[in-house]
Image (cartoon, rainbow, N blue to C red; front, side, top):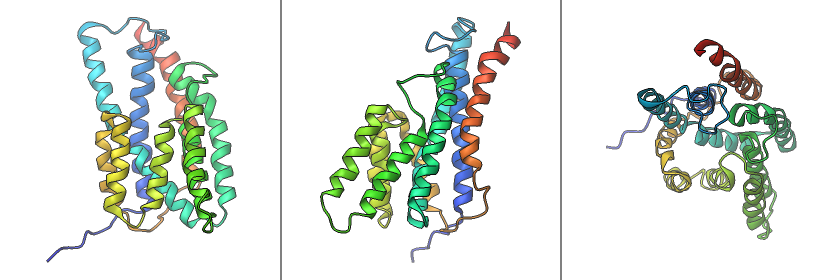
Length: 250
């Protein structure tokens, strides 16, 4: 007899897991890669890390970044849930748009140590474009031309703007929406797309285990916590890398 899977994770719990794993990922991407390992040649620490120390910090960075692969699929899933249950899609999209703008300078500082860097845009913009794709599909009312429009227009915009995860990020959001009632196919399609983007995305398989445990309940959560936390933690990480680490290590 097949035992039913007990679904025990609320939307709030999933969001906290996504936030924590995102933070872990960004500690690696910002503090270690930009400032300690100096991957981009812009760190005030310069060649501080070399030889055996470089190997140690490189392995630490890889552990953090692989852990962080859990976050994005969970955020995509929660976005789809939000799109399905929101009473006002326009307000939802507007909120994402506002925080995409608010987060851009913190994002550029954290990952490029610049106030403006056109070569990469923050994940709020990816989520916004994914939401717009869902919005087009939800409002299609049998008009088949809207389906390719929903896929191509936001995906091309994501790729052109160099958003986090790019066109494939928008595709993953759409697949989560379209295949929401076929969990096993949703997993195969989304996991395949993410690993196609980068083989290092393989740990995100854990995201789909967590999603499978979703209880369908929203749970208690501070309403705007993630929106504020995202730019705030990026500014904090940049501040630590740019000002605190040099003073500690020199």
